[in-house]
Length: 319
Image (cartoon, rainbow, N blue to C red):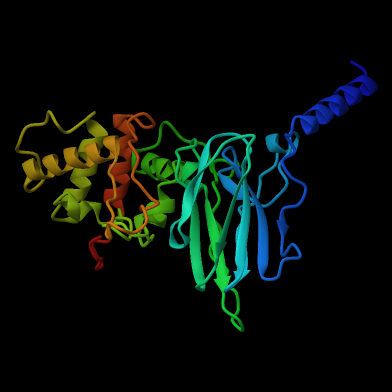
């Protein structure tokens, strides 16, 4: 095909995409619309990039662009209007502190929400519907700043795997290294914190902050660094610990084995975070069932990684 014909085809496809509504909007954020005290945002969910973005999403840039996650800044007391769309998959939009949602966002449809930002602070908004491998990165910040105060700049949340920023997985790596890769690739760190340190607030949840993983060795009743090392070696050598008999070189091995099986089951089947206040909002962060996304050997890799994080020479709080 000649260059001219190829250009003609591309122009035709672009025009067709525009006509079909694939260019979802022209302006990303419109601070004010002539209505006093109103701030308007046009927000699009892009599952393939793991973001809610203020950038224009259309039928061409969707396939190659790394869209930036949206950080919404508004003055305290402002009326906030958010026009919500999806570029690809079904999403749910949720800001629990302002009783926004969860709102169903379907491709091809716009949902508009309006609320008043009455209190200042930094609040997360979420996608609460499992929307692909980058789902747990589909969150952003609403920053409400009181008059005379300097706006806070919260940490940027992006999916390294979606952006090609993560190193490739090494099948020949040990379990601990594989577990570290899986922890980042699957977005575990967005809820359980970098290196399993925890501290991520789950609004109105019984177990808020989200449980940390750098205390897993203690939760498995591993009594010493030597026991933890022996535990990791057993995981490396065996497909599972369930069939192993007593007498392993780990103190209290039957109890450790039972706790290990319980931890595996939680990862497989997930865990619901109940409401601390029954009349309050639904907690936005729920532990999903990972049994269809990771196999048992990968679960062992995650557990080996978690056990490796425990600071035996320091002091760490349970959580």
